[in-house]
Image (cartoon, rainbow, N blue to C red; front, side, top):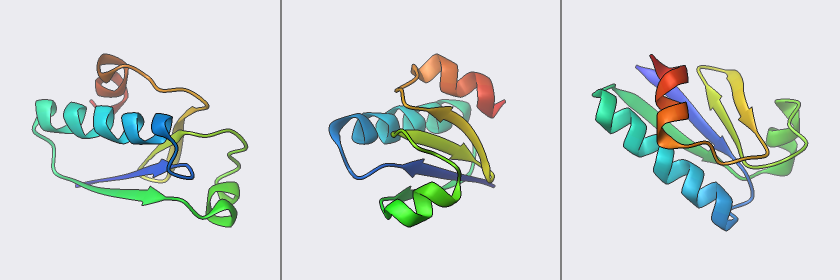
Length: 77
């Protein structure tokens, strides 16, 4: 099971990133746990200074942008 975290304060880009990520996971048929991290201190603990950001199994994969569903799939497989 993949642990996925979307880091951001809840802005529109953060919402789109969460939607893209969920779609990519469903398309790939992967089991996952999705968490939205909105606490600034928790976000900074990842070393992230720009949001939104995507973390997969504890590793920051994208920062400061909303990747396409295809790009997200590429890092999940």
